[in-house]
Length: 211
Length: 211
DNA sequence: TAGATTGTTAATCGATTAACAATC
DNA sequence: TAGATTGTTAATCGATTAACAATC
Image (cartoon, rainbow over all chains, first blue to last red; front, side, top):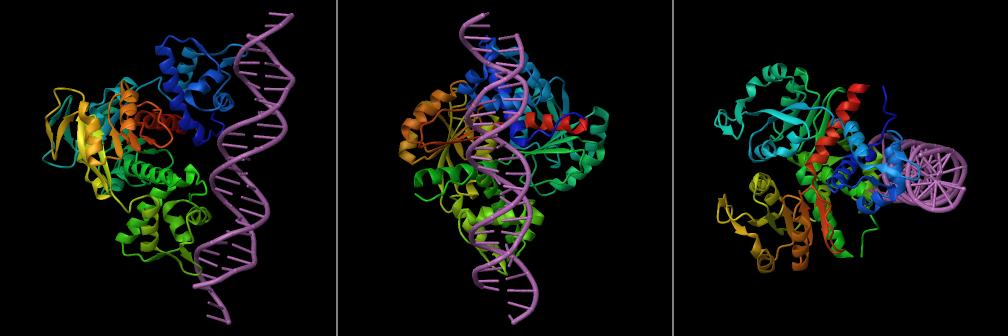
């Protein structure tokens, strides 16, 4: 309906605006110009104004932007003005780390259950969660209005699992498995590939010392 | 010295080439054309050839690319033909998850020790590691030829810690703390910001259902 | 050789930056 | 009002795609 095709480059800057504006808010700063924001966030003032104007005219000539209002607007743009029910699949080290991190819940992302395929894990208690049997995922998704699945599983079997989740109506997948999942149009996959990130670091370190 | 200024867009695609070529190698596939690779990796054949030719002419007209040779070349470009000594700071859930993941070690990144500032954690055993006192980081870095620091700590105090690490000669920081660290020219920071990733997912889910 | 596919140049597309009139 | 700063158009820069001669 809306959205005049915002580029991924812009979209990936939005959470950073949100974070910096939150910091300013914590410091009780009430207004900021694109120039001042540029100095702290590192994008050009021109880019900041262009980015924001994709979504509306949030500023005021001669004044700048109201920090709180802009923070709230960007929160809304990011879809943070509501909450999401999520499940986490793969209750290994990484899965537990993510489940135990309170920051996601504070932002409105509520992990309702942990699932694992390993019989030894099923039934174990991890803080607030009992680990459930992956066989019952479909029922749980339907019963608890789950929209997001967080995948902390090995790449083997990941695609098959996603096929099941998609069939049950999952709308978003936060994927930590090192595989590019295939999903239909109505489903979004956001990948976190730690190995790719680490390899980028080693590339840049190498390039850096060659100079 | 070398490097005719490769763009970040190209650099971030390199680990993906490496992964897909590794998969092909596992399947005993010996040659691949840019067109075939395009079909499985999802970049255009033209882009693949452009990307690779930034680093050398690895292909052969009429034949394509030798999978194993190209895999090895990209590994070398990424700096994976050697090993790196690393420390991990912040032995909480996430830190332990990363320390326990064997894939990084297999790729040549050896975590030599875990550090934590919390007295209750110090001395605890996590698999192969005893958690050490953060106060002794400088000595450990010097004694063990540590190049990479993995930061799994809260943002509070992260910059101060990095200042210490940089002073001691750390060359790369893999940063999981939600803060943009300031480092001098000779040091690389690669950020993994989980919250920004999650917020991107929620933005895309929202945009998707609006259509 | 004929066919296939690269390496590379040129064309296009998209994103960033610069500039400035509008306006608070 | 005068000064500041936005919103927005135009200019520039960079990245992607297309095309094709080179060549295996």
